[in-house]
Length: 312
Image (cartoon, rainbow, N blue to C red):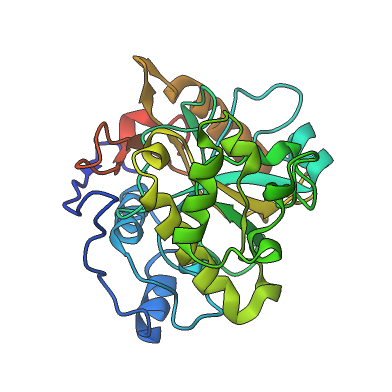
């Protein structure tokens, strides 16, 4: 990394999440997927990573070329908030993830915004999208999508199934909920009871869903927009299949990140993660400063700052 200060702050001009902006690429344009794969790799510089995150954030395609390829495979950002390491490395599965068999991430894009991470997290990590995962890195399967927090840690089936005692919480396809409008209606039905997170269903987006996985994910986004600003105020939940511990060298970590939340920055804590990762792997994963939007009219921004880096 260069010794001079490098700051790349990329402002985004897309519309609010309830009115998605025009896509920067056709859903059927396979060439764009290929160029995305070529544009970033494990050896990219910090400024290149920030630019790539911004590009994907602005890419509002419906899918990655066909119905069997959901949009998260090539667009948007899959990020996971993490606490300060306590007994295990932050990229290893938590005890909850091991118990459930699923690990929670959130998905952000210029047409699907959120203003904060889950719990009180103010730092975390970002995975490469599967279609641009560098050679030698693992592809971690994405299983299901809750357009808003679905209390997934209390559910069966890797966190994608039902909450015991809540029949309406079984997977959406099992109760014939196929569209975003149907999902939103189901959410509203239980919102007044205080059980709306436990009662909602997840959309199946795993590879085995084949030609339904892409439409399921996009319908989930439509459903989330229909209950805006709830999905802006409360993070969504994308459940990935829990991986084994000790895979630091092969996990598809694109970046560490932090943001300022309620006046408290996550920079110092994420620097601990960056140093630890370098000790284990010899690789310096860049730290990216993320600025979350305060309103639906604002956008998430991604900045690389040399002064934020604990290692090079």
